[in-house]
Length: 253
Image 1: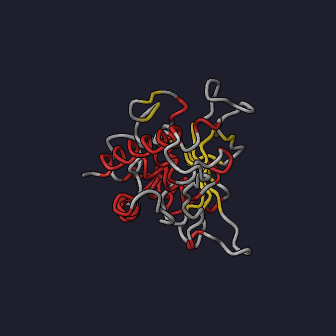
Image 2: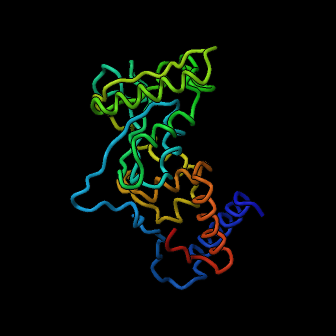
Image 3: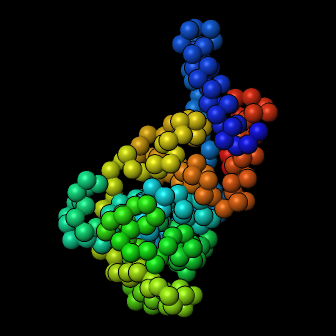
């Protein structure tokens, strides 16, 4: 049975379980939510080691969020709007902003250079006025930089990307990071929210906690099948453990 089939099976079991509760067939004990640890040991920076922030635009921010959320060293992700002139943009009224993802990361676990590698490998930087089926200025490719060193590094990687083929032009912009406007709550952790089973698995976190959660960022990537292969298999194993031992048993990744 593949992972998706297992999730569908467990989702059906959960629904049946909840119906039994409503029918009064189970003891009326208070329900216990299942929550994985919200911080992985390697992602907890010491007090004197602040997190760094990177912002990229590479098409739909729903997918962009899932691309970065499962990487070791990434603490949390937030989707939003950057690169435009309008104050307080909204999804239906973006003006000249681009859909973006803000990545808070521990530099001990991942570097800006490594994040750039993921950026370049995860979209078509030569596509004009959009990305894939998403057409429009809001889906353009942009690297937002914090300072001169990041700008130089971004420019160097763009030049390298251009040398891979001279038949088309890399359209990615490199811009200084201005104001990042977080998107509306319904756009945060979009892939995870499409899977009620996984939401229940991590404890049905309230919206504010979900947006800040390291665990939710990872599970959002898992739901989209965009985790690195090793982590994807690790989470698969935990779900298999639930199936073999019964519900609920999941405590950590």
